[in-house]
Image 1 (cartoon, rainbow, N blue to C red):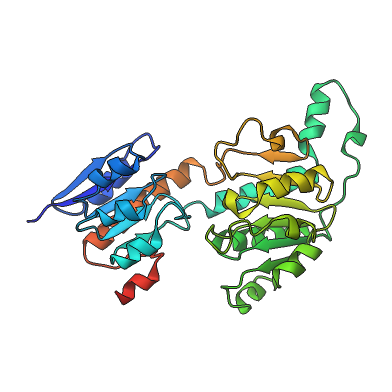
Image 2 (cartoon, rainbow, N blue to C red):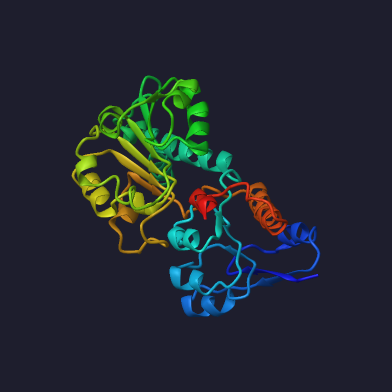
Length: 325
């Protein structure tokens, strides 16, 4: 039997037991696990791969062009912005992601940031530790009930955010030009254009993918349309928000606060003004994380590889255009 080779370019997990257990379901599969993010080294690494599993390594056109027999590139994530989709599609290679391994975790994280900022938990807790017992540290503070939440994107995660936040008595809007307007209505969510969402939302939570159309989707022009008391949350990708414009909007009081699990540069540079603002909470791109979500992610990546190397289509195909090849 012909041996098939699975190459993992990079990973940050303690073990690969989940992947190995899935790949053991196929005969004659060789697993090559690496920690490689250099483009030239990747070119050498993937040449004889039948499937490539990637985390953060740049899977550029140059890397893809070097693949002689690859059928699948699958990422340990929802976003695939480090993979050249056009190059993979042109070469007839499936690109897959794992869109549902951490939707509960990410939706909870977005809501946690929203509530922590709206209740001003961080400055209140800090003042108590400094020996101050004074609620006026949080002034002005407003109730959540009756406010409007705007969701930018309406996929799996924002749907879960909408379900959970509906119990807080908020009105929910969404903007997603790729979703049939009847879908959000099923969840009691009103689909609107982006400008309407920005003008009417007290809380704006970003959940769209990063691509050429969404990069810097929220920039100075968009911040100028928001309410002065708006709170902006981003648990998607840092590049969706123009960070320079966000900093300016916060500095001039154009918006009230921001909660970021993602930034344009990760880790965020230590000289970023965002790190020194009391009305900003930044977490290290960990919204997805729980022990359960890691296990699910690794298992589902292995399942996708087994599926494709068995002659089936991937379950979570990103570049659907490849089916026309």
